[in-house]
Structure formats: C-alpha cells, structure tokens
Length: 238
View (tube, one colour):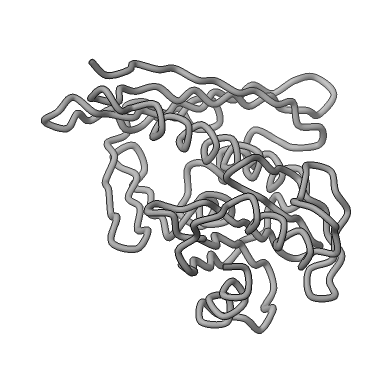
C-alpha cells in the first residue's frame, strides 16, 4: 500500500544571516558540520553524500542562493523517494527564518516502523541544524561516524547513556550534562536519538539501522578521539 508524507519545520534565528544559513545547507563543509557523513555540493547540480556504504547522489531541483534550495526526489523502482526543500527569509532586525520541508513515499505495507525512525532521525537532524546556526555559525566541524554494538534493550541503553552523562535516567531535552568532564546541554532527545552540545562539539547517538548504536558527532576542535575511540566508548552502553 505504501505511505506518502510531507513534514515541515521552521525556526527564526536571531543574529544569523541568510548567507550563513545558505553556507550551512548548500556547501559540503557546511553540511558536514550538522548532518551526517561526508558531503559534497556541486552548485546547481547535485548533492552527494557518503555515509558508510551508503553513497547517494541527489539532483538539485532548485538553486536560489540565500533563498531556496531543493534536491532529491528521484524514484526507486518500487516508487520510494525522498525530497528536501529549504526556504530562507531574512527579517528586519537581523534575524533569519529557515524552513525545511521533507516529502516522499515509502512503499509496502510495513512502512510504519521505517517512518517512525525517519521522523525521529529527521527531528534530530533539524534540531542539529538549528543548534549549529545558533551556536557555531561560520565554524566548520569534522564529522565523526562510529558504529557501536547491536542493542536489544534500547530503554536500558538510553538510561546507561544518561548515567555516563551524570544523570539518573535517560537524557531529555534541556538536561545539563557532563560528557567525560566536559559540560554540555542536551539540545534534543527522543526515543531513538540524543544530542549533546558542548562549547566545541556536537555529540549525537542514534538507534541505527539494524539495531546498532551509532555515533554521528561534529567536532569543531580536536578532542583527541577518533572513530575507534568512540566505538570503545559505546561498547560500555550495550
């Protein structure tokens, strides 16, 4: 049967310019600083991504620098597709409004679980973009992707993650935490994701494909940890 969807989100960003928003969504280094994996943008032509073995190339369908970007929408043989659109509006007084629209189609009769994961992950990516623009605009991060152990009891894993952050429970949006001695704030959390903002990094944990705990971090200064270090760090949460 399948499921067609369209989801949107909007934020007003004080002190952020349309040019800064454009740099974050329409350049490879900008996307590297908040989305996932490594990214490359061919202006007006394509957005290319590399996340593990997943390496899609999305055609650009709208390219209006500082105003509108749209890409994706290519259909698989089964009808599956996802398309993205960003709308940018500068406001008087030095603020900028950014709106993101995600639309697509999931085939089959078992689309509910995939759609739930898409919503949870999409919310984290959106809140990370907003967090990046509000706290790190103009800075470039090094993306760090690490695949941890398979998890069977996710509520227990999120609770253990909370313990590692100095909490007595699973992390919640707005919690003040400490990650290995570094103070931070949980800027967004839901049943499948948790994101922590520190002065020089964004640390994110996802319920990944196949039930694997996955880290997708963005580090603005060298914290001395590579992918192998994060794999070891996550092993204690299984």
